[in-house]
Amino acid sequence: MTDTQWRELLHTRAFEPEAVRAAYAARRRRPLLGPGGTLFLVAADHPARGALGAGGEPTAMADRRALLDRLLIALDDPAVDGVLGTPDVIEELLLFHGLHDKIVIGSMNRGGLAGADWEIDDRFTAYDAQSIVDYGLDGGKMLLRLVNSDQGTAPTLHACARAVSELAAAGVMAMVEPLPYERDDAGRLVLQDDAASLARAVTIASGIGRTSAYTWLKLPAPADPETVLGATTLPCLVLGGPEADVSLRGGALRHPVVRGLVVGRTLLYPEDGDVATAVAGAASLLQSAREEITA
Image 1: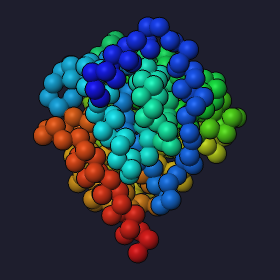
Image 2: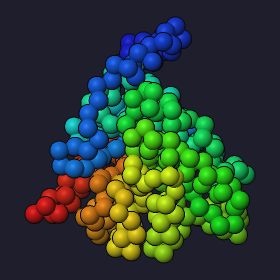
Image 3: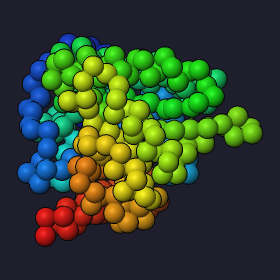
């Protein structure tokens, strides 16, 4: 991104708000799945939940120009099918004409702010189902953190079920990310990534809403893919990145319900700063896995 492009974006934001709606309407769309039947997305919805840390820097994602730069580099790779983000990020990418022929998934519930007392009561504060349909997006993503000891789970579960139903009524993909958590002795949320906990979360998420016809799941790459991924027939995307490589190479990407990858902070903010190489590596991992399946 040049200085001129950055200044133009700031000018548009201040003086031409109508350009955002025009950019939504002008976006060239494509089928959800690529020719190989896979989907590779870059996630950039963390800042709206106040989760700004990346690459060892606690506020790395607060630098909007740097975030957009990294996203544009990732999206420039033809293996990257699209992006998952909140309205502010999606609209800035649209204004840069960076989302033609790309899949765009709108992030919906960002109200469970990182570290807040009410974090598990994850309100829908970004896109809603109607706006995703109206703006011609390709799907809506919702985070469903399941904590048995936190009553905030119940309203979040109910809101996600309603959103799944509303998106399905419009024939639009609903991407649900079910994550089981428990609180440690200090009250901190700790992901329960054992097979039994993840499989339970999968079955809960698979059953919400009036129909599951348009539901996809977004999951951590499990160490035991047969148990976790064997709990559903729904299409799944698994989280990518260096910390997941062992699980991915261990079979998660080769499981028949898995259709692709979602990568986020770990690839947008790699240790060596080389976003293009990090994204290309994840794309190669996905391609290799699919080739093994079809061989």
